[in-house]
Length: 247
Image 1 (cartoon, rainbow, N blue to C red):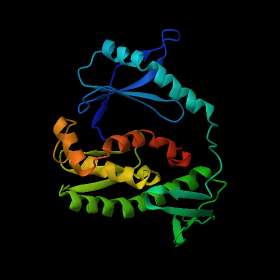
Image 2 (cartoon, rainbow, N blue to C red):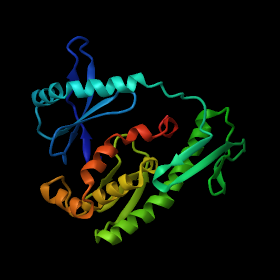
Image 3 (cartoon, rainbow, N blue to C red):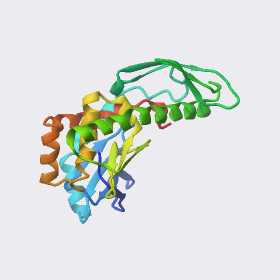
Image 4 (cartoon, rainbow, N blue to C red):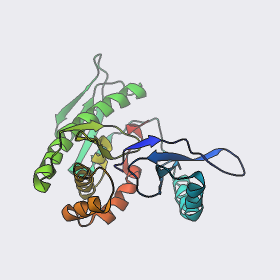
């Protein structure tokens, strides 16, 4: 979610293996402890600055049943096939479906042959290069879609920002700097439109409140009354992101 954070030094250990079991992220802006389980079973605990390791461990113990259930759920799913390239993809945020063809070409790149038909200039046998060309296209599509969308929400809410960046972040859907720069994750394109709008509103509200205070959430609710349910959906949104986006 949209929280300015630093990698922490806290480690949680499984007493049976003594190996790190969770990734702990210390956040200057977090107001409470939160935990997320990502595809593949990776567990990340977000911790407010100043929280003691003992308090973090108590939090994890209290939520251990839920964490174990989510990890088990991911393990029961078939492992993603990391070799074949997609022949079609869906950008739920935009209501778009694209067929994807791969054809070798010396200079690489991509072409939108027509709406819904994408040509990637790469040998499909060279999976890393083909995926990189596909990611370049995704970033471009994200800029063309998310930047004007953010402008529309800014005008509707009256919340102004300075500039926008479209990035391929692994752990955050968005962020807002004190200088008013909003960063958006290109993987938002795989989320439902209502969820994307909520994230945009969330980041715009950070231009007024650089925290998650009660005043911040009141401002969010003013512009998106259903933010609680949308936030829960966004928390599970990594499931919707295709493997090739980060592989």
